[in-house]
Every structure is written in structure tokens, then in C-alpha cells.
Amino acid sequence: MDELETFEEPCLVINLERQFPPTLYSPLEWNLREVRAVHVKHTRVACGYVLIDERNGRKIVFSGDTRPCDLLVREGEGADLLIHEATFEDGMQVCAYVVHCWFHLH
Image 1: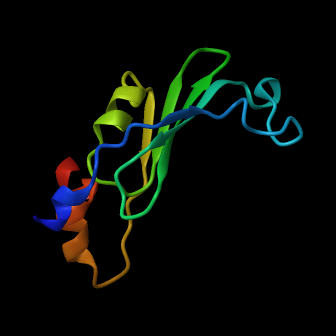
Image 2 (image 1 turned 180 degrees about the horizontal axis):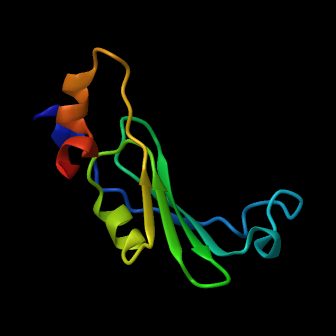
Image 3 (image 1 turned 90 degrees about the horizontal axis):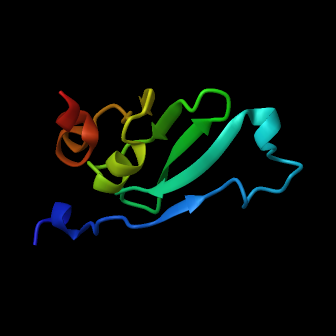
């Protein structure tokens, strides 16, 4: 079996606004109605994040380098802004083309 086929489809979404201590996170101070951690496909356990603005309902999706992930697409649908960080060290260009979204976005 190809190494790329060993990734299972992520299935976990956690609403974080109830997980943070009030001293660290206040929805009113941060102007966020909702903060969700979305499990993504990565070589290690990793999450993308969906933030929904309290004032205007705008949705912001942030994810690091990940393989294409249907769960993140579904949770981020209708986003006003996508921030998708995907960098590699010098000499790892082959990995970027083979196992991460960067290749699939071009």
C-alpha cells in the first residue's frame, strides 16, 4: 500500500470556546462567536481552525500544511478568508509536491 493511502479521513471537530479558561479566552473580548478545531490529514496529529466573528458572522479558516482534507473543506465552507500555511525546508520540494495541498492548489 502506498504511504499516501495510509492516512485515515479525519472525523473530529471540537468547539473550543468552552475548552479555554475564561482568563485566556473571552468571546466578547475576542469578538468570536465560535472557535472550532478541525482534525486534518498530517503526518502527526494536527488541527486547522475555524473562527466565526461575533459582529458580522464572517468565517476565517486557518490551516497549516496538510493533505487535502474533506472535513476541513466541509467545516470551512463559505469562508470569507482562508489562511493556508504550507512551507518546507530547503531540499524538501519533492515532499511538498507529493504529500501536501500546495501541489493540489496550483
